Each structure stands twice: as structure tokens, then as C-alpha cells.
Image (cartoon, rainbow, N blue to C red):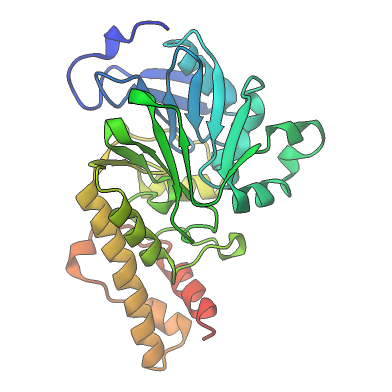
Length: 305
């Protein structure tokens, strides 16, 4: 493995980052720890890469066509290619790049995510070999020692197949789009997402992951979330790690959001009326709420109102 000494400056997020462009598909990579070869690659959606002598473990693969930019970044610090892929859920901006990693022998996803991926055009015909070949129901352990990975399924939220990928020795968890940014999440009801279950799913995660102190998100800001949903090619700001307190706040946000919608239902308001009059505590004043009206309508529909 190539040395990562150029990154070891003692900061949590180390500079300078690698920056690789393929057309307008720009991927930026920085390490998350001075002692461990764990990187986050921004652009499109956040991808994590654990560099190992036995081969790289990649968490999510970005949208279709981004694979070369990811590979170029990885090749700059590792002599080994990607041998394991973990797909956190089935949306194209997180699984579309699977097809660009032909040497990946293990591809992991939740069973529900795999079922949805099987219906996607990108995995038809010869590309079916890039579908998950190992599924998670509740929990799966990978590797050991300092590289140990624990993969959890805590329940419905963004979709019905969202995984949380934990690096216990690094005390870090990747929540992907279960915690995309400090913003109203995208609730994909068509993919089994649930605004009603979302707060409880996050609460279960917080209860289980007692050793975690840092959290990486599915995107780096709300603009990136919206851009990815629209299929845009975007480059994000420097990757940021959230704290477990940020995660707790985000769980509270989703709980308070659900409570506000239930109060509107009890008051006899329509979904549109509830969306226009939505009032949330002051602590969330900096949250991006562009998805809020859609989430209100999704919760109304889920509760049969």
C-alpha cells in the first residue's frame, strides 16, 4: 500500500485533498483519521473507502459514470483495487457506480435494497453480476482488528433498506441518507421509506451505537442532497464529520417534525395547510426545509389522512 504520509498533518480532516475530475464528475478525497487509512470521497454522494493490503472496502459507489474518478483517487494511495462494496441503500446515486468495479467479489446490501436494485436497468443483463451477493437482515460483521466493520439495519426511514456502517475501532458510523445533512430528509415512500418510523429508527441506532463519537452523512449539505436527487453533478465542500450530539439533534428533529404533523392532523388541517403552517422549535432554524412539504404529505398519506 502506498504511504499516506502526505495526509498526516494531525488534523481531523486532512489537507490537501486529492481532486480527480472525469468530465464534470468531480470526486474529492480526504482521510478521516491520521492513524487509519479511512477516506471519504465527496461529489455526487459521500463514499467511504477503507484501504487494506488485501483490497479496498468501498461504502457506496456514487451515480452511474463516477467509477473512474473514484478509482483514480483510490489508485493514488493504494496499490489494491476495490474488492468489497457495501451499498447503504438502493438509490442510483449510491449504487450506480457498482458496475465500474469488476474486481469486487463481495457486494453487500440489505435484502430490500437488493430486491429494488434487481429492478434497475443498470443491473440488467451482464451487469447483474454487480448486484449484491451478500444480504443483511439485522446485522453483519466484517473483518477484524482495527479494520472491523459492523453493518446494522435499524428499520425504515429514507427507504426500507437503509444500512448504517460502523467502524468500531475508529468510533465512527456512516449513516448515508438516514442522516443526509442537517435538513428535512428525503422520504422515498415508493422505496418503503417512512416518516412515521424515521424517528424510531434513529433512536434505535443511537441506543445501539454507544461507542460511536463521529458520524459521516450521506451528503455534505442540503444543496448536494437536492442536486443528487435531480441527477446533478456536484462537488461538495470539505467532508465534515458530525458528532453523536448532532445525530441526537437530528433524531429529535424528525420526532418533532412527526409530532407537528400529527398535531395538524388532530386540528383537522389538510396536508397542504399543514405544510404551509408547519412550526418547528427554534433549535432547528438552520435546517434546510425544502423537503418539508413533501414529507408532510408523505406522513399524511402513510397515516391514511
